[in-house]
Length: 277
Ligand SMILES: Cc1ccc2c(c1)c1c3c(c(C)cc1n2CCCN)C(=O)NC3=O
Image (cartoon, rainbow, N blue to C red; front, side, top):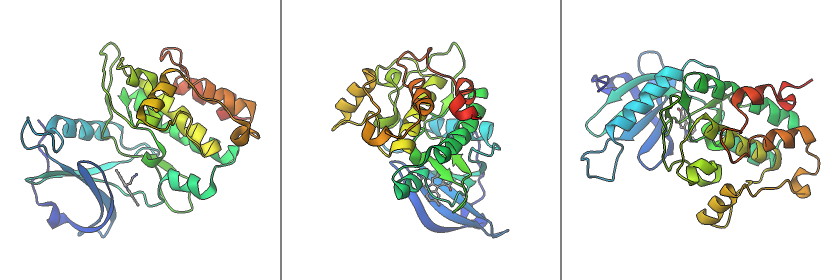
């Protein structure tokens, strides 16, 4: 297993405001005591006993760290800086992105015009291509995990690799994870996951950026899953009346039930809507 920095975290960083929290993790803004630089610190609660249901198993934490180390350094992917361990937590020190969630940016505008949406999608595709080239699948692509680096800027970064993993050709991975609205049919049907699983989620993000509505969301989880496995979506004129045929075709190439027939990240980067004039 990995050995993490035993030096006390508190000797190197001052903890500031809480930025967000999840089931077993809390993210704080922290300041390096040496340089004054700001970072995000993700405190992941360790699972104490194998039989416990609380906290995260060490293997999962090590996987997140391994993945972050493997894909950090790309301009559209969050960079891991350091890792510490205390009795209860593993602390990931991460690059701080202070521009807020893409989600808020879209909500503030209700939806984006095509050129702006396309510029964001191109960045997300570049980030995803970096992951998939390194056999990493994110498995939780959604607007909350796409954050703008600085306020007023449009550079965005993929964050939160808590569900991501290495998936090598020939080693099928099955798991029931992700956020219902964004999961692909193979997740609902507990069939092998693959890079194509991220591409479906990108289709959902694109649909939301252009319309402000979620394509498969039902009144409850089961209805959402049923919409997904039956690929039950449409471009209602109310929200897509002014959307170009190219944009709708781009989305249509991602909402394909058979993961092998779904557009890959390279297919998307070469699609006329993204490749542009
Ligand atoms: C300014 C700000 C506000 C909230 C933040 C973050 C930054 C943030 C960050 C990260 C994560 C995993 C979650 C984060 N959250 C929690 C919400 C993310 N959807 C991260 O890795 N770097 C961040 O800046």
